Length: 566
Image 1 (cartoon, helix red, strand yellow):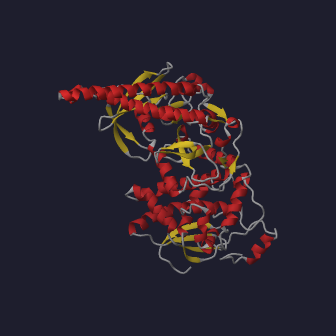
Image 2 (image 1 turned 45 degrees about the horizontal axis):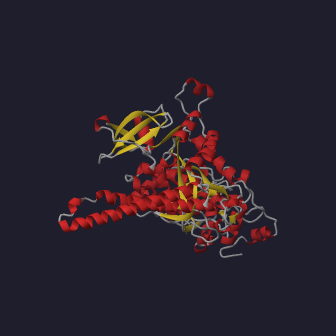
Image 3 (image 1 turned 135 degrees about the horizontal axis):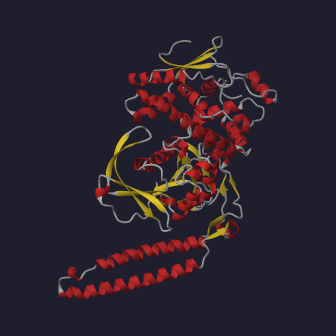
């Protein structure tokens, strides 16, 4: 039955199909490793970990209930157990005590249940329902949405995925792209996977905007939109990749405001136009920015607002906005808060293993999918390389001057060198023209069915990855909610998440009282007195939620103190 298995009768009944799920029963226990992670149960439940599980998922009869599996996955994410295989190095009986069971499932059992949960076709619906709940709970955050792509590198050999440029590694590698939609403070709403990346612009048009029109709460009515021509439904904030005057005009017709960096800002503005403003960030910090604003007309005749920020080194960053209602300070703060989404990607990669695959399954690419023509990509690469060489030669040619050759004997060498360089420039220009002509004769995009046999590829199965990513989103939102509580009693806000990780890893005692219907989680002392005092305030806030552990009638009580016999 495995190490730590003590519920012999229940396991025998489950093995013959006579048990729907083992009951959750806590027993008194001391010094449980990672026991502090139970402090996150109220936040996990508040963020919807078990809210819609019975509606969208179903497991066959067995020992482990669907609630136990979901709670285990959420606690694993918070304890930075990034793969089910890492459970082999965790004491199964100790982890079982955290769930009110004798032990947690074997890795193979957990893998099987993940496969069942992700193959029912309900992951998208469940994730969409959670996104709708999160937006409804915080409609103000859903009014300004940050969209950006995250490239996930694939190092396997199951298939040859198309190449993507990975900015953080400055290389072109085989990868897929996920497009995330986040709030201003970095909290995620949902993610869209693109096995064959069509780019941020097409993903916004085809995937993200239609979903947001349906899900974003508090949108103005048709009467309100008709009465106020400048009113918008919500704001989309993205980087230069999706810069397109045509797209801005399309969104304006749908009454969606866009906010992005200006791709072609032109000449710097006079510094006299800039004024100092006190700009408050989403976390309450106040910074001084030098901002200026003008109205500009884009190439398609669309009038937009242009807001520029002047840095301490006199560099001007230009922002374009079709939000005609907000003031200059609001527009500046929204655009320059994009760092929160970048920090989210970095934090999730480091702590939640965001880029790691969940399984190694692949599936066939539909024949009608449009992909980049490999021949076009090859010619385009050659053209870019040749153009780069040509530009360097032109710079060198223009920089050559006879004044460098003072001696009369060197004049002949100067003339010969410049003539050779001119001949090379002419040859490169001819090559560029030839490559452009060849590239123009080749289709840029073709269908997957038209790909040559050697260039065909399969795409990675995404259902299990999407399921686990949604669990990680819930865990991140739960951690953020606890961060907001804990930072009120800590002097250094940058240490809050670090202290939370210490709490999750710390030992704790479990003291159930079935007569009083309580389950006390008593955390051992942390590294210093200041950390203990901050955690006391967290305990008080968690106790005020009156959270009942799922599957029981035991109300959770949180304490911090010395280890004592229950």
